[in-house]
Length: 111
Image (cartoon, rainbow, N blue to C red; front, side, top):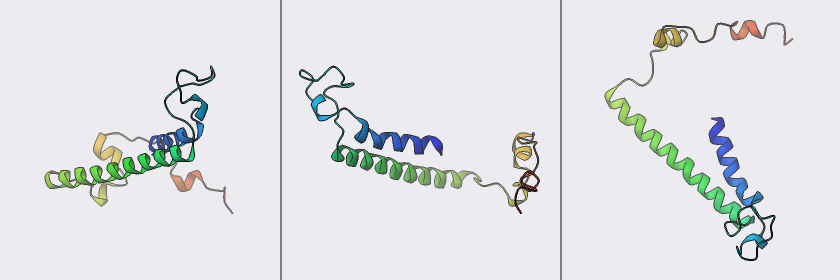
């Protein structure tokens, strides 16, 4: 969701917005350097950050798939089709969204 996309973009942009190469030496780094001696902005750093993001995405997909498959051996993971329309009430005993249904909410907005 939103946190994964924001985290991925932020991680990749470290390679773009990090300190400049002049900040790589802690002893001679200018005062404006935020993290002297750590990482410098470059296309190589952007590539490393992107590679790390892709590895994390792949890891997350594989682990999620394996966990769901293990769970499916012991329990039902997907609710019955008949309960989808009233799923909140079925699972939690209450209705989560009490506003107008989607078609009613958009009535008259489109010609």
